Picture 1 (cartoon, rainbow, N blue to C red):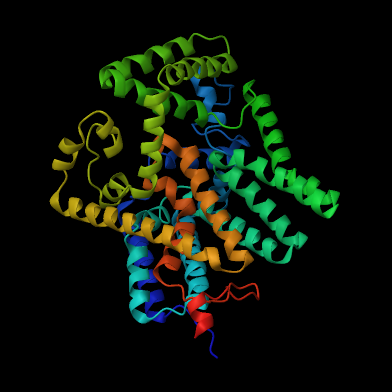
Picture 2: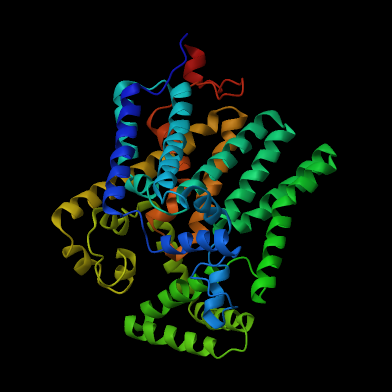
Length: 455
């Protein structure tokens, strides 16, 4: 029997979508997002000065707040940017990311095709499910680290599934490598280093193989060495200064805004930064920010918990107004994103000011996001009766999705979903089409239902 494949017309639409987006961003220079300049500058400083620093390097050790630029961006993505963008601008980098995006989507679709054998109508629905997530196309063609991280997450997931199936050391090793790559690309993944360490100890105890425990410690060792390197450069033991930035400007500031309003929030943030600037060194500065922001969160735990939950839900439903507006070259409205304006009581006012065309697109995307989420829950439930690999593998996918949602918290937005979005897509495709009794890919057939046995 011929092995099911992704139809050519599906590939044609996906390639055309990526190609059109690539041509548009190269023509309009809309590949640059607020964080892009820091990635480009860090890459330039590594190449010219051997310094991972995200602002122009002046040749002398910076002081105060400027010290945060040593660690605001981790090493992984600037090295990729330096390798691909220094000679011919960003074109090679964007083409590379576009190909990675097609690869990542293609892997998920190929997996679904082999097991679900979808009809043309179901392929059309799957394609609609992809093109109605514009953040995938936008960040594949931006100087941002999301697509590279997405590839690392998919490698991590593949390695986990392969190890569940075979228990071979090479797959555990591949998973360790993917975790290390992910945490060096984006700081949000560095707490994940604890997971393979614990898993390695458990597996070593079960299999009496000490090598697994040692191998599982590799990400923890990498994190420790990286933090030591940061301390050597800044005098403060930490992984990335983005943690304090988010804690102050989003977590704590969001609570102040909800309680006192935007004017008080702005004044409070300015006062904390002024007090931090008076500290004798960078370590004291960061610790003061932690204390002041932490005091706000401890004083209003219910408000913050509600804010955190809103952010987690927004991660999955956000239509990406900023992303779409930026790609289209539209001016960013004042007042921040829709979530920030909702917290300040101005959501309806913000929505009413949007162009009708943009509002229609965002409404369609938000509806598609909700449908994908429902299908993903359905797909997760369907896999409960599959073979061991998929029964356990579904928890790997959901675990990574929830990990990103919890760690992102109040910052929840379409951009932060991109690295794990293929996992959500895979579950949604199972929810769309998954024949009863399908083989799980482990050689195990899914248990038959009672009505199947009777037939």
